[in-house]
Image (cartoon, rainbow, N blue to C red; front, side, top):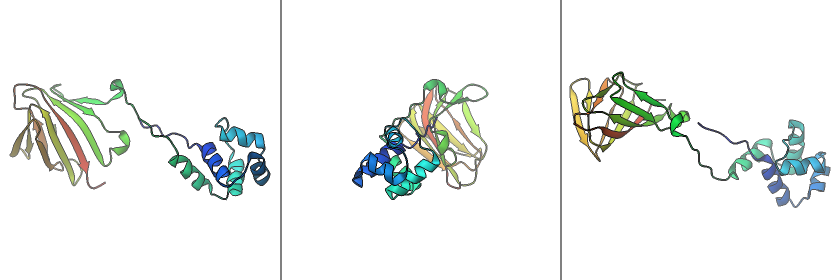
Length: 191
């Protein structure tokens, strides 16, 4: 879940006002916006109307875009959390393979990454992805075999990474007798 925070225009406005050496009364006079409204906006207790924002930015000598951009630059760092219950999980028909989607939805057009868990003897079959798509399979437990076109195959053990074209039919299977886990990155070069 990707939440974009609203720009903190009040903080950016206050920073610009102070950089210009203006107090609230002086900005009120220049912008034709009341001192009390300016104070409320700066404290984040009120959102300016478009007209007020236009008047304020003109008085401060910046565009609305510049004020919004400086507001975004001053945002504190944030950590986004996605609860396990909201993490997408996909299963093969036989329930022997589980793909846990780890990337945010916003990146899916360029790349995706998954935790892949395959039970012994199970396999994940995939039709060809879009042209120039690559997959990178890093085994973190057990072993996995990648098969391309039903005839080219390579097996990787724990710590190994396989990179291969995914714009052709391919399959990932667990040839071992214990569950296997891997990180699977799908990189779409042509987006």
